[in-house]
Image (cartoon, rainbow, N blue to C red; front, side):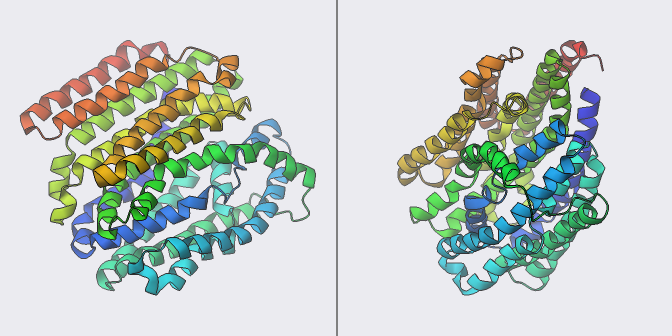
Length: 468
């Protein structure tokens, strides 16, 4: 079981992570050209897209996934009906996205408003949800190479386009939007073609209203849950703009937060690989395997993220060619450590999704998002751009571990995940990182060896019960 998760995680994670590493290696080039204002425009536009991003699929990923598992012989027909419905819906979604961009765009980018809107909505209008459906098909069928080959190819194309538009053409922030639009068109097409002509999953526009309404009855209550991702991950930039924080400062903040995005990519790869395996273990009632897998991933992530953050100051000195951005290493470490809650949260949420016990999940996830917003509103005017990172860490802990106390979960609890222990370990790791990050290299080497030793001990003494 662990070997399968590791191999699939490496395929899902290291594949797309290689271009990300190349992107990091190019930071000395990009940070020499780009300004904090450029990063500020990018951060605010990313937040505006995320503001309504949850509405793009209307939460229908869950009914699509359930159709795959519960209607194995004719799930493609159901997928086709959802596909047709979503193609129509995304026309209205594109109009809504254009309006959001219009109201959020900072003054520094308003001269390019029309082009920014066009570059954001063209891939959506042309191909609809093809990329989501394609990725889901290959993920659920445990064929990660199909996803990763596309991801790697598109990532390298994006890097090349970014270099050409930003460095050679000197288009600054517009280079990101042009490169992203072209790359997304290629990515969407790479899924659209096999969906239509190889897998025979085509949009059915004469869909059964009963099928769509049943799917929406499951997915709509999940929208507050999915929207928590925006409240926790993107609303902070919009709040900074609301409090008249300069675009340059928002760019500094967004640059630091981008390293949290890299961590999210790693965790997402692990979760993507583990999801079908956990679902299969639940189906076979191998509940201890579900727990052991969740624990193993959680401990691995705590150790690796802590070690990486300990050395973040040295990494920034080598990689960042901008004196102002070099000082963002401390804030970046907090953003990276924020994502350590996810394996435990993912383990329990997979159980809830599989049993379709999701109607109250939004109370925790959306509640954590509202908590994040309110606390930021109270603290940003007094403490500035650094406070949202710590608020985010606390909010993610509430979302990740608060789920264990839902009555829905207590009713179907399959095993004891011991969430309290992992809750405090997550906090302790953050404290250690923040205390060590500015120490000299010898101390860092010693503490790094301690972390790595603990991982080895955990693997051989604890995880051996999972006979791999």
